[in-house]
Amino acid sequence: MEKRYYEPALIVMAAGMGSRFGGLKQITPLGPCGEMIIDYSVHDALEAGFKRVVFVIKHEIEELFKEMVGSRIEKYCDVDYVFQELDELPEGYSIPEGRKKPYGTGHAVWCCRNVVKGPFAVINSDDYYGKEGFRKLYEFITAPSADGKKHLAMAGYILENTLTENGSVSRGVCEIDKDGKIISLVERTKIELRDGKAMFTEDDGESWTELDKKAYVSMNCWGFPAGVFPYFEKKFIEFMDNIGSNPVKAEFYLPFIANAMAAEGLADITVLPTHDRWYGVTYPEDKEKVMAALKKMADDGVYATPVWKK
Image (cartoon, rainbow, N blue to C red; front, side):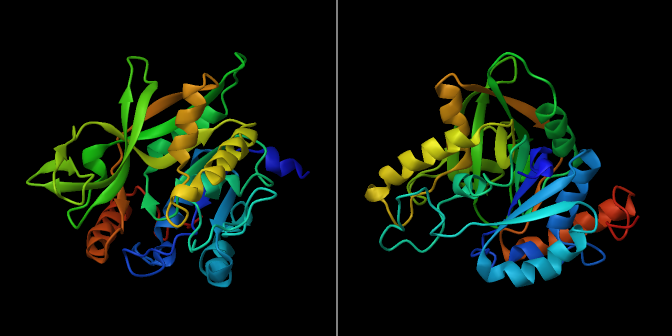
């Protein structure tokens, strides 16, 4: 086993094809010098202390992704590629009939089990997270622990900082205790800004419920200690055993695994308050706003121009 596999890693989930945006969002130029959002995320992670990156992609985008992204980032850190495919399953399992898409964010991370042996953080490839979350996650997952429990962390973004005016988004809405530990995390798959309020629906818009705009939400920006992959495997097998009720669309969400570990007393989850604004191109109409925000950050000196400038 390669020694570098034990170093703190950043896992970047980049297998999605961007169906709502209408293209491969991961390689859309958005920065003032043609940078992609993924450039900013990896840059900020390396600045925070990470030294290796694991990209989770599909074989069908491998050549393009390596040409557009990997060829540049490989100059600055160790890079590995892992493939999230339908047939990447535990031994003895097969693709459910009718299934056309992979099994979700938990599956994406599970696919990294052979190249990640140390602590790790996980992000989406097409979300701009800002610098604060990476700093806090790196400090958390590299801090020593001797109490026998797995300590997980989530960069907690303020809901109102993560919404788009152009449609709905999916967010994990958190309830936390006085010590910053998660009590519950509920995935709301359709949150919209409606008359200035953050509202969600669970019945395709028949009814809407207001959310606290100051609530902390998950943006799939997580930190895990070493040694959690056996639990990922256990829960993924349970998921596959019960997928028969919805074999085509059932999702194995990353927050589900974290929640389950906490519920079983194996872990606790600390929310690391993060005040940076999220930017993402969920819809084509978001692109102009994201480009303006990245240009302003470059003008203000938050980033060099280009971002990879030595």
